[in-house]
Structures are given as C-alpha cells and as structure tokens.
Image (cartoon, rainbow, N blue to C red; front, side, top):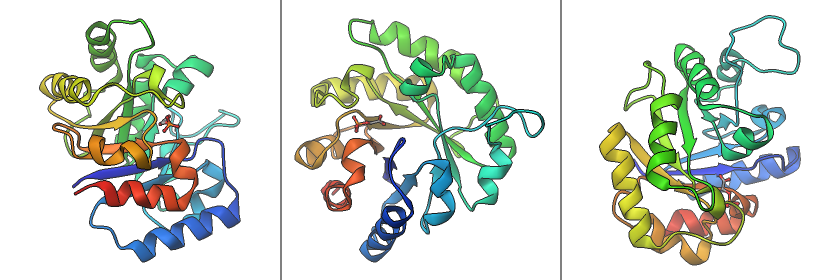
Length: 223
Ligand code: PGA
C-alpha cells in the first residue's frame, strides 16, 4: 500500500491534533496514512500513528526517554527512527538507530528508518553505510520501511530531480528489498510528480503536513 506519513516534528497542540485526525478520518483515503505527532500528542491523535523516536532499552533508569512498549501502549503502530535531525542534534549514530529498531520490532512496532546524504556527500557511499549499520537483523519487509531523505532537501524547498529520485530509490530497493518512501520538501506543488514516480512507495512530509488542507492535497496527488 502507498504510504503517506506526516512528521509534525516539535509542533502542534491537542486542539490541532484532534482536528487534524478528524479531517483525515473523513477523507477515507485508500492509502496508508500515518501521523507522527510529538509523543505528548500520541493519545490525542485518533488515527493511525507513530512516535518520532524511541529508547533502545525496554524500561529502567532512562530519565526523559520513552520505550517502544510505551509507544505501543498508546495505540501507535509505528516509530520513525534515525531522522537526520536526530542524527544531527542528538548525535544518533546508525548503530544506535539499529538498536532502537531492534527494540521496536520486539514490541511489535513497525519502523520507518531514515537515511540520506548531506549536501556535497556521495549518495552511494553514505547511504550504503547507513543501510549496513542502521538495519538490525530483526528487520524484514513487513516491519521496516526506508525513508530516503536527502538532508539538503529537508525544509529547504529543494528536491532532487524526478529521475534522480527514481534512480536513488532503485539503488536502495536493490540493496534492501524494502519499501522506500521519499522525504524532503514534499508539498502540494510537487507531490503529483514525486508520488507517481517509479520506485517511490510513499512520502514522508514535514512542513507541509502541518496544514491539513495541504497534507490532504498531497494525499490526493497519488494516483
Ligand atoms: P520537510 O521535512 O517536508 O519539511 O522537508 C521532511 C522531514 O524532515 O521528514
């Protein structure tokens, strides 16, 4: 099924979350739509949802952390792992991402694992290394989806060309045999081209997922 995920990052309040979920429910889309709200709003989102991170440990003295079981307990089915903002600001390495994914799989959560090169980096070298180190042995085609997000495209309004996206997704799919969704400056204006490109199994939307009518336009762009 085509996946369209909303990554709200550190945005939104209870009123926004409730209303957004109501609008998505009314849409009745055939696609797999998932909302990734801040953890404090997981219980407010009455829709298919996931957390933006989880701890690699199951329980214990880890102040401020949230375990995969706790996320599952909110009714969430997914967790987003290794987003470039976490790799950058929280110093998350691919090895840490893999240990978090292993914990998530043990709890029965599906993982969306983010990979992508920074501006000026070699796509094949960086992404191959991230694939090798970020996917635990527990990953399979049912519990793991890859999000390819070129770091230079996130929140910048810039995207690779459609043929670059198609080639890069093919490279990742050949290596992993997993579904690959695209993220980085997806908006209503470019969603039709990107969503319907070859090898694109879904979209991960940041900024444009904070306005329900824009997010709905993106969902409706997938033919
Ligand atoms: P963006 O973010 O759509 O605002 O570029 C995407 C993401 O970070 O997942």
